[in-house]
Image (cartoon, rainbow, N blue to C red; front, side, top):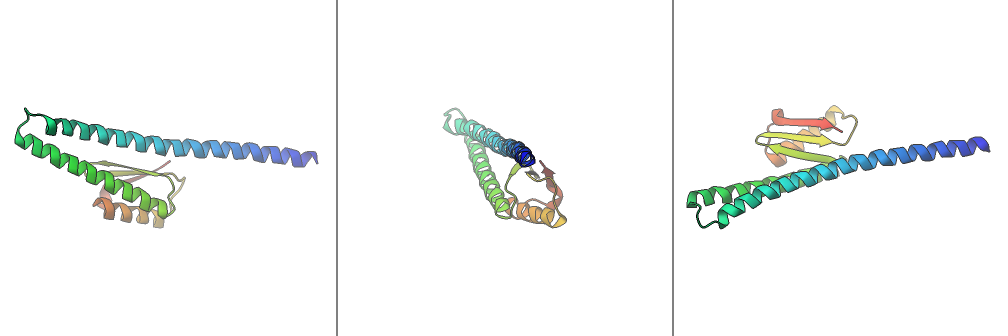
Amino acid sequence: MQEETKDNTISEEEQKIEETNTNAETDYFTTSKLERNIMYSQMIERYQEILNSSSELTTAKTVAQEEINKINSIQNAIMITENLLKTKGFENSVIFVNGESVSVIIGKEKLENQEVAQIQNIISRELNANVENIHISLK
């Protein structure tokens, strides 16, 4: 009987550690997405100020509107891509776009070649990225 209690205690402790690790991983992805979205919001705000300014030239306002449209398009594509990755079994992922370079962090310890190809396919299709510009990291 004592051994059973000891085994159950160990299992409960291991379970708590696993839950803590899972929560920390989820927090990383949630925080990263939040920080990314804040950055995009701040960029849009700055461009909005140019659009609302009476002293800015028409060309500056045109560029500002184009940049806002580009940011909104990127945000939409990232959201779709992250959701598609989730439907393919990659529960935790976060994507960062920097020019033509796309970095994706996947919440897994290991990926099979087939999974890498699947991730690259989704990202290249949804974000119009060349495969050589897609960088996959694991967390």
